[in-house]
Length: 106
Image 1: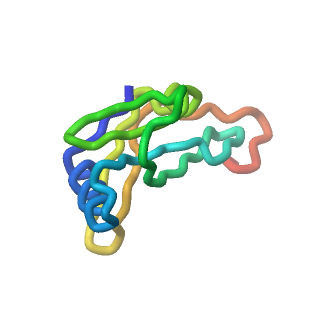
Image 2: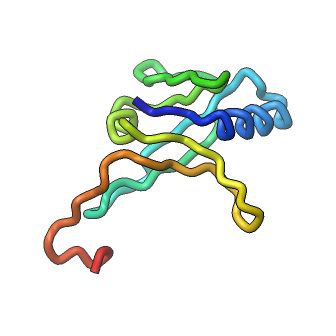
């Protein structure tokens, strides 16, 4: 199951409120994938789709399709703000295993 940190929830709720969409949530989707695992994207969305999984934690709803939900199992949505960089990050989960000859992994 995906978890949502308090920092991520607070920042997302702040953004949604600023946009006038305080009752919306975040959508995480699989953007692409390769031999080293999937890439994910994030957006805001008004409501869950018909077949979406929904995680609600710390007052924030996160929507994802079933395929993305499986890939995010064991991961955590967090918000990084270290002074130089700021943004939402996904951490944890299973490390991808690259196949022989993977040009991305060296």
